[in-house]
Image (cartoon, rainbow, N blue to C red; front, side, top):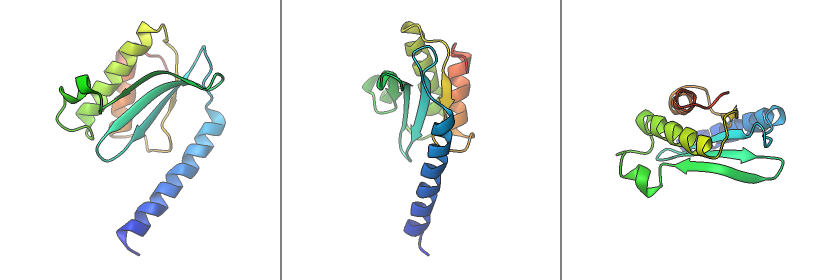
Length: 125
């Protein structure tokens, strides 16, 4: 079994975990869902209202203002910066309470850094 096959298996396992998590976590207007997606090079965070099916706030390491401040979008420092930015943007739109959706990823490294930075900057979950 090569590395490509192994990566496909890991991706399928993550998607299965994400579906199980999504059965329990549902974002409303009062408490939207903070969803995190990570790739090897970048990180994407959204605050989503699942009832209306809309993204209320988003941030990623591909945005020009963020990309100029960080060297690499796929590390913990970038995750902390994204957590700060998403919290500030959410508070500007008067969103304080969110439910955290880790999207099937383990709660460590970049996912943990995003969550802790968002909590430190005013989001409650």
